[in-house]
Image 1: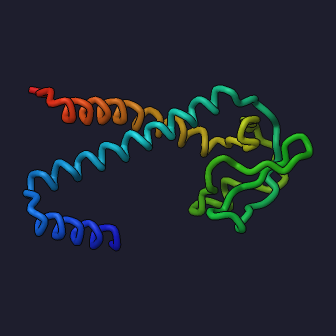
Image 2: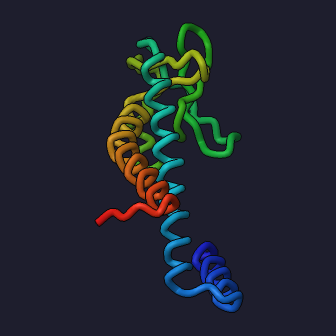
Length: 150
């Protein structure tokens, strides 16, 4: 809600400065496109980290609430390793069963684990946002260069 109020205030200020509604709309679309490109880049990096990950057996030990977001901690080869993504809060009891050995992917560059939930998030997010990021980048460059899409 605060974001929407801030956006409206910025739009009103831009209107007073002499920008047209069309220019504000184009500016908004370029910001949204840039955000999609950044999210697509994030998932591309996650897919690259996934490629360098090794399959390991691990045991869920706890959920660390002291970080910015609660993160599941797994014991892999005697070492406590945090999950790459925040833990799922909705089905916490069902997804994180203590002392149950599961197969994880160990990402050595980040020293983090990738459980099945994180794996699904990376694959689906990459499939959705990477093509969108490529399209958004092409549209932004085309608009800046002055090429016509039609």
